[in-house]
Image 1 (cartoon, rainbow, N blue to C red):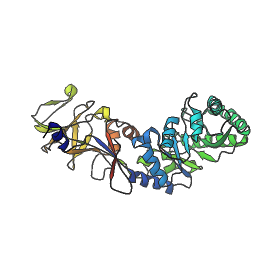
Image 2: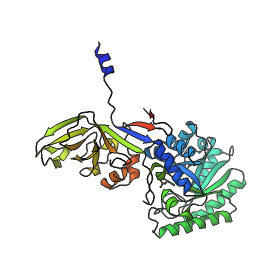
Image 3: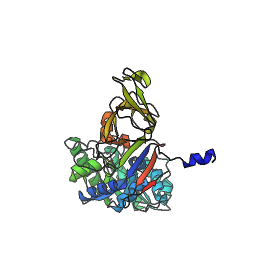
Image 4: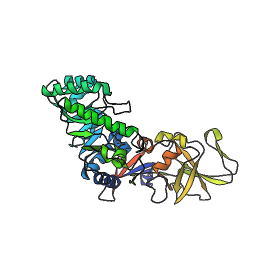
Length: 387
Ligand SMILES: *Cc1c(COP(=O)(O)O)cnc(C)c1O
């Protein structure tokens, strides 16, 4: 038997793997459609918050979402290339972006400034009518037109509409503090949005899609719903308002590479920040901060090994972490759960966010490219490997 055939016959232990459970996305989508009479836009920016934009989009559309939202035109075109035909809105582009390709692919565009309006009109050059959503800053000074430029933007858009160059199908805003429903800036944001709609109407615009709410506002304040809610985090199981139980969709696992027995007093990892207080067994896992485990969680984070919590000890390395297994020496290849939905007591993404002093969004969007992705589809328990 040649060396090659021996290698091929060895059982293959897979490395770090991120499992995406689409039935969780389906369940979360239904939670949102049940909470509003408005239309639901599935926000699938940043590769569907790290869950796979096309998979999240397809699943959400199958369970009641009717529109798709992304930041860049490139993200929208990728959805089109995957065969998704639902209305899709792109809301963050430079003025020299490829608006022509967007309009040709039937992608709606947010317009946050007069310069963007001009650039879109130049891009389509009268050949097709662009569909646009005028975007108002309702109080976070981030994206969207400042209020003192709004009336002029509405007038210019109305003129272009009357010349047959575009259709203003929507007006949008975004709240900066909706995760805290008691924050007074939410009422100010709602009022500014209402003012923006009145101003648009006064110039003759009749935007049929009016949208202000993202996940938190959708869950906590029906006054923000208008005709559509734009929901991203909630679909993947994250509720920043902490008012509803949603279902996390990700499980990250990795096999133990090796186990070593160490004496009390053995320092571990870079900087020797942790020293074994007693004799113990240390397990090595082949993933680190390059794979999205935040180094800031060093000294706090845990994993689940054979149904028990175990501490990650020492500083996280780029490609590896060390787990204190105590007396549970497990064999190499033993699967370890880094995080999951929490059903079996394993750490959750929310716990990881706490350990790293960040938010769940940053954990789920940060899983690195070399982690293998498997998808558990809705109707079978079968797995589909992304690569
Ligand atoms: C990301 C984003 C959303 C989705 O927000 P979630 O809180 O994740 O639902 C909605 N609207 C805009 C403009 C966004 O940038």
